[in-house]
Length: 221
Length: 221
DNA sequence: ACCTGAACACCGTTCAAGT
DNA sequence: ACCTGAACACCGTTCAAGT
Image 1 (cartoon, each protein chain N blue to C red):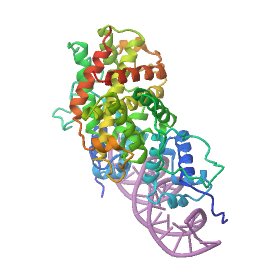
Image 2: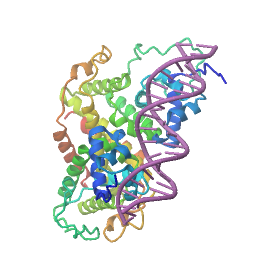
Image 3: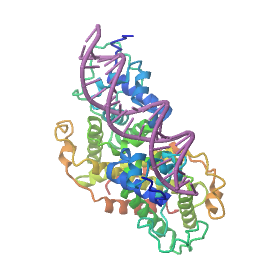
Image 4: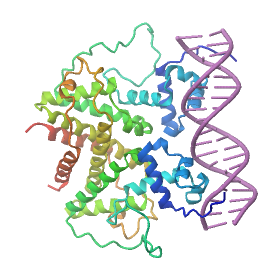
């Protein structure tokens, strides 16, 4: 019964944890279940995340919110285990104009949140001073500075953009959670709800349109 | 040891649950702790919420998101226990113009979310086809219809407004969660973050301004 | 270094019983 | 109807032990 050295890694653990969250929701993720999925005793996870589940949650948030040029989702079986990512390496400078960089970020970020919407509630209360979060913030600040803003206007613009994406994603997730409103509850007191029931929204198109409006509104006058 | 008839009620349970969440976070709310706070065995709660904790969570969400003219937060000791709320009673029609009604709703809704930000993550995955949610939706749809919109435009406008408030609140809660970014992590790779570190935002003013922009943008052309 | 296995305190929930 | 108390299955985590 001593199947040791299972080849566990933080990456594998995070990937499997997200798989469980996607399938059974955040409440379905338990250390024991995660251990089973990894074919390992639950306690082995603590060797990679000594601070336990909270630390694992932090890592999951960082994984999801990490919108880097190098793709994140995918198989982790590398051919060359010698070559390491090297987080200090400067990525090649993005030559696109500021608004295109922000557009690309917004679409990628949204896609990541939607792909793992079960983990959405995690991002609310975790402090985002991680490497990935700092990189995103730098991307935003630099872009809005290039656009001609300065000082508090830059911070405000970045806040607006972040709020827009988060709000849109959460609204979509909630809207998709209800097929339609409980017919029994919609009575004479809700005439316009009854009239508009079943009106479906194209969330992708709506997001793209709104993003353009936000970016246009953030441009200095 | 038989202290019976503790005067438990759904209202008291929800109020005490929110108190615990406000103080110790959502993870700090356990049935046993809630029972202690109510001076009752934990199992007594199941008599008022037979479906358990999930049902309690639903009730908490409904309580928080219920923006009704009659105030919600406050002492529950009524002088006249005979008189019941009567949920079928038609509230007096709101005579204010559509934009003022929406403005009032947005500010009240935001205040409720901020007051119990520890429960924010609950609102993401709970289906909002409750009485309170339907009333809010009717308020939105009726207002935008009165503004001159129709069909899918009404639904889109309501989605934009809801997304705006949610996004703004979550951004604020996350921003307040970090005093400032970890100085050690801000290095040469984050020049604009370093330059703008410590720039504080007035969240109230920002929200009010953004709300005006949203409402103006939703007005039919 | 990496993983196991037993143990501990705590959790949500069920169920029979009390009043 | 409303609440208690014991019980069950499960949880996160600690710790000593194995290799």
